Length: 196
Image (cartoon, rainbow, N blue to C red; front, side, top):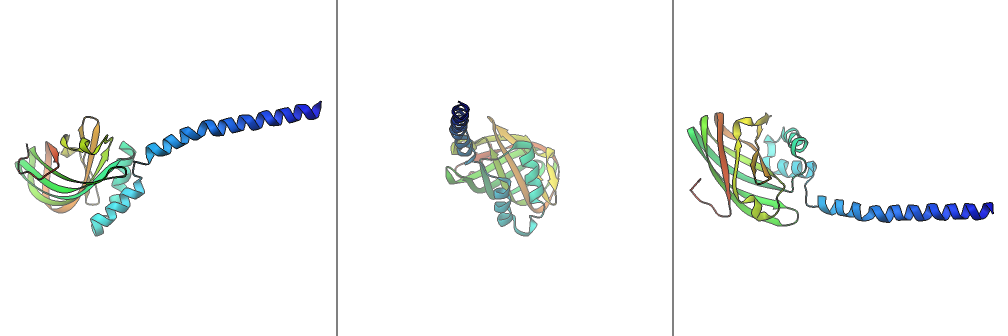
């Protein structure tokens, strides 16, 4: 009788354990599948070090700040841009959008700004992209306040938003530009001189 009760308890424990493992497996698989389209901080830092080169000393800290604030991106853009301002300003850039599940795509950006802002700059730019539903979701106007930048070790970070998609440009470069401005970037599939 005791042996039978022990056997029954062991069998019940085994079946419950098996059900728990089987029950958790789809959830764990779904979670890993969901995150497979996102980039880790180390992946972004590695891509940035290769892109920014010797000026990337503060990249890990600024990427850490972005990840703390916004989580894991599901895309990033590497490119170059030039901008200048005397009260009103213009920015033009080009690069490539990288995603894990949709490959690499060309992207161009341009945009006006207005505010207390003077100078010019040429930058290497990395943009972290969050909540991107599809490649087409990156094309359009993203607005933000550039003066709200987080700056460390020669790198600056701003935040732009459109329809729930966040673009977080991280810039370094040559030149001098001082001030605060309000504007937007218009992302396009082909280059254009029209910033509007």
